[in-house]
Image (cartoon, rainbow, N blue to C red; front, side, top):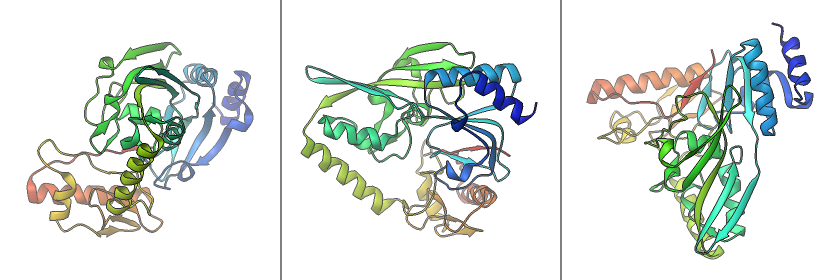
Length: 306
């Protein structure tokens, strides 16, 4: 089916033409600043938008990829065939109940933006996660964490949609949270909103904590360069970055991709890297670590496209 025909179907289902882009370069939508064109790129600003896109996807059998802030993905140089649906649901609601605070937040809200809202409302318990450059949906999917706290520690429940447009709600236990994974990691579900349990605090204390975590991040992580955060997962019995460092790979480059000199667990887009540069460097690092330590290291990022 022609792209124009699919766009017409999307418009017929109520998707605004201004929220649909053809052959959209994905380097605009990923923190790596890398990626070829997506055939059709759609911003979903409502739950009805998500349902409408799913209806067209099911009718046309066109492949569908869901993204949030694009901060944990690497899109290959030839781009993505099919539809990329960027979730931009950003409503939130705060209810204070005695000593605790219940925050309902839609999946497209960025963690940093939510953190700023919580400061204004003097709500504590989210500070450790405030510097993670992703959306609530992405954070739930991978059970994002920092400074000893993970999403599993604050999530009460989550609403999601399957690819048939049915909506479900699950409690904390049903998320099957593990290290950097959840029930959403390998299933075709679209996270719509989550409910968090936080605490009352004081603006001064919250800001102080966030500043400490932010300073730590600037000192220890290469946030001055495009990346997708930590490239590799921590091992069960080893710290991956330490093994990479002990292979003398800090600063090692392939093309425009480099193993960060500041933190060996980060591969950065140092100088107009291609996705191929990043993938070749990932492969090289994995081989060298296995060669020296006989340890398989796993990716924390997701590679998509062709």
